[in-house]
Image 1 (cartoon, rainbow, N blue to C red):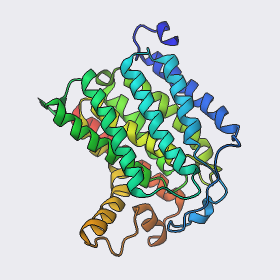
Image 2: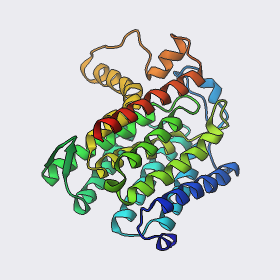
Image 3: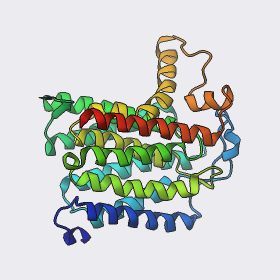
Image 4: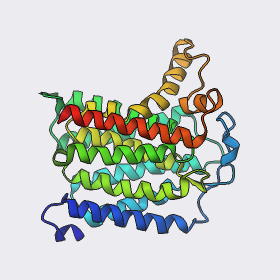
Length: 316
């Protein structure tokens, strides 16, 4: 265990070394372009969806395997860490099987799998962690059952919002990189070893972004976006500031969440909203506002970074 070389499991030295090694290990692994990975079929309803046709898809599988292996090397293995890595891999696998399927899975099927995995993780989470919530200087505790229910909802929402935001080369990865860096910078001590987890995944995502920047050669697919969404929610809870999920993931929430709200209201209540707005919002900005893909990626990342700085100023 390389973690034994450091005084604490989440020392800055361990975090930086873990991030750098995760970057190079993932960079090398993705370069191999494994033959078993599926190819994208294009997306009929997405703006410029045909541009993705034929690209490697589902490389989130490679990212997840590299990340978990690095985590097992750098973070002391315990019951909670094994459960975390196991659920992360299961969430990735559910996305990968959808990526590799000739017929896309239904929204209901994917949503149910996300719900079950979220609930299973939260059932274990409340056994290892206090159910305390901090909101700026206000702190309070929730009953474990209520905390588990709210945490399940947060994870499910984060998974699906992140998945909906993955539609432009470099968009989800660049947003993810900002979020994964912001959490440990804001909540280093509170996150404990999850600061190390976050920075190692940050290195993994940067390696993917090397290949995914426009024009991309590969796509992480649902395998990657669902894994990231799961992890964002876990970071928010482990920080003790679950409400921090809102500003630290605000751009992603607005971009992908708009589509979820639109579909939910139309499907279950026959209420039509945002009739003249394409969702996710990045499609609307590209088709109706004339934004290029690099403009969407850069502007989204800049806005999210500024929001992270704003939260830092408010908390400090």
